[in-house]
Image: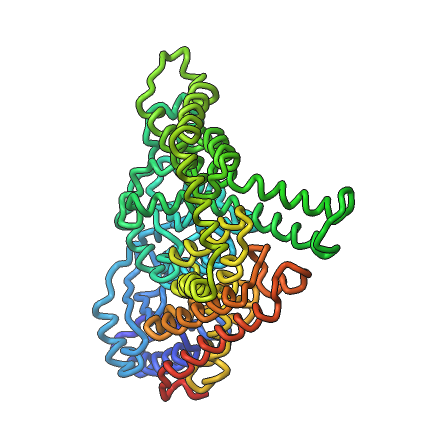
Length: 580
């Protein structure tokens, strides 16, 4: 046979042995064919020696046996063949001959560049888990991806203007509204963190195939800098199933809740800290000062909730009327339900004015800073004062009276319902709805539902951690490691620690977390537990009087954990390859 110059690349997806073995077998087969061969083997077993420019230039053909994406741009214009490792291992000599015969001139097509933003209401778990899932999927697909996370501590890995400019498509995987103004003129695809976490590869594929150009909805944005700042849902790029009207409303609500949560947490913990010095704080004391600061934080909760619901809907122009409506909801005793109502009233008022109010060009500059805030505040204020406020205040009063008058049986049922919702989808819409309900009742000084919600919210992750101990032989090594992490996340009141297990085995995990959450919630309310801090998990135990009764509350969490862990340990299938 004529001597030919061959370059061979081997790369395995999961194991180092496969790539190393294939390289040796192919080299031996190539020598039998009297081919001159050079190898580039991607394996920790050998040092990587990349082909030089001279070797590539002199090569007759490049043969690639790989189970993972590789950057082949350096071989542009050369005869090249790509195949899988298994075929090369089965019959190396035949594979080499067929590969050489089928090699074609390789034309490099630049890999798509994707930028993404992930954000969830609390900015703790889903934000970062979705980012990691997208990053891993992009790596496996050979797609360049930069992800910006907007978490509880602000932006991490913020996207630069250069990265956005180079991007083929933008993915916004968020459960709240985020600033999209920097993406104007780019192809944009909108989804949520849950979908990005569950189906990251499919999300990237859909984004590349079905994204649409993101443009401001109104031509007035050129003269009105506040009309579309990317926080509204005006984008034509949002035409996918995740953005139904109901989903948009839910997303606006979660945006308001996400901005309100720091106030709730700070206010609740400050009031709890004031109790360290005793139940009755004397005027002028440190305890009284802490209590007043906490009360001030609680007083801002409803205006902030309402304001940022409107902000999510209509940009900065909605902030003032939304907050004014929220303050009216507070003074009218309409509570968090009134705050939600005023937020949507303000948001829709601004939207209507933006769409239908036209002004002469010389007055257009006054529109965002004077006319729209004034008119929207007037509409929101009058509706809240004369139409909405009274009925909602009556509803809040009735709800508060009902909760305060609950007997033992009804308290158990309400706790079980809240607990089941918290355990059902581990940070998803049902979980968030139950949590938002409990947080809202803090403004009415009703602390029982919050106790049930947090107790039940700790159970899913704790239960998965317990299951990996009770039925250790049923879990793989990686699952047992995930179980250790789940213990920590559960103690921190992060239900999402159970998601790795639920994603693999939802039909067994979800019933276990649902029942365990219901048990924890029912027992918490059955004990009459009260929790003044809406977050913190086990750390709240170290603040005197933050939880009462502490023993009953701890028993509720432990019982729910035992039920979830025991159920899943029994329900989970054991596979022969799991033993290790």
